[in-house]
Length: 379
Ligand SMILES: O=C(O)c1ccccc1NCC(=O)[C@H](O)[C@H](O)COP(=O)(O)O
Image (cartoon, rainbow, N blue to C red; front, side, top):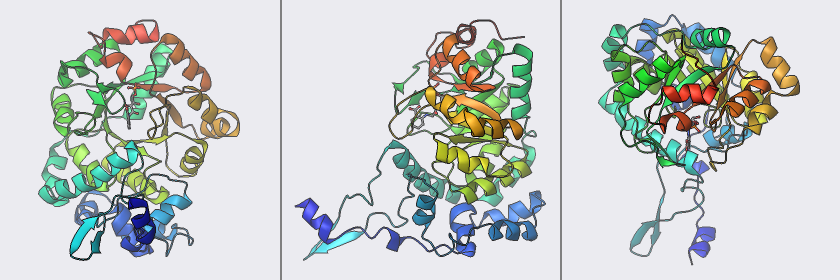
C-alpha cells in the first residue's frame, strides 16, 4: 500500500529546494545573513575577495539545485529538505509519507539533518552579532598544526590528537565517569599534542560547555572543535568557546563551503582539519587552495565499518606525492588500538593520529597513551 502511494506521490525533493545562483548559493550554503556585519568588522576579507570566490563557482553549478551540486561532487550526504516532509492529502486526511526523499539514508545523514535544525535554533538564540564580545574576549587561537608538527619532530612518532569522547553512535557509552577537564588534563600529561572535543549532545553526549571548561582550565594543548559543521555560525560559536581548529567533513560539505569556511577559519586564526574517506573526496580536497591538514577517517561514517587500509590506499602513488609536494600534514583517524596500528598508519605516511575509543576506555586515559604508542611520549 505504502509502496503504491509512494509511486503515485513521489516526494518532490528538488522542487522544495532553492535553485542555486552565485547569489543565493552564497547565502544558503555558506553564509548566514547575520554573518556579514561581524565578518566585515573582524576580517579584512573585502567584498572584492567575496566576488573572486563567487567567480570560482563553476558555471556548471549555477542554476543547479543544492542537492544536485552536492551529487555532482560525489557527495552522498543530502541536506534536509528545508520544508521537511511534505503533507499529502487523501480526502479529508492529511499525513506525511516517510520515503526515500525525506528519511535519512544513514546515520551521518541523520546527524547532518539534525544539525541543520539544531543550528537554526541556536542561531536564533545567539545571533552572530551577539557573539562579538565573547570572540573579542577569548584568548587568541593556538597553533594546532604547529603543535602536531613539533610533537612529531620531538618523538619521531605521529603527533597525537586525543579525543574527549563520552559516547558514539557505533559504540554507545564509552565511559561512564566522564569528567572532560580531568580527561583533557590526563591526555596533556600523557603527551597528547592536541585535543579533539566532541560538542554534539544527541549522538556523542558532548557539549560546547565541555570545550569551554577545558579551555578555561588552562589546558595548553590546542583544541579541535569536533562537530558536524553545516554552517559558518558554528565556527564562530566554537571559537568563542575556545576552539583553535575545526573539523570539516568532505562527505558533508560541497567544495565552495569548504573554501569559504577555510577562509573564515584563517581570519579567526584557526586551523581546519578537512576529513576524507575515499579517493574522490581526497582528490576534491587536494584541489582546494589553502588546505594544510587532511584527516583520513578509517571509519565509514555511513556504515561504521573501520579499515586502516583506507589510510594506506589514499596515500599511495600520485596522491601521496602531491601531498608531500604541498607539505600537507595528514592525520590518520579512527580505529587505532595498538602500537602496530600506529606503525601501520605512520608507514603509510601520516604524521599525526586522532584517537578516541582506545584511550577513553582506559581507567587512566593519560597512561593509555604510552601503551598505545609502545613508549612514553610525554616530555
Ligand atoms: O565514532 C562513531 O561511531 C561515529 C559515528 C558517526 C559519525 C562519526 C563518528 N565518529 C567520529 C570519529 O571519526 C571518531 O570519533 C574519531 O576519529 C576517533 O575514532 P576512534 O578512535 O575510533 O574512537
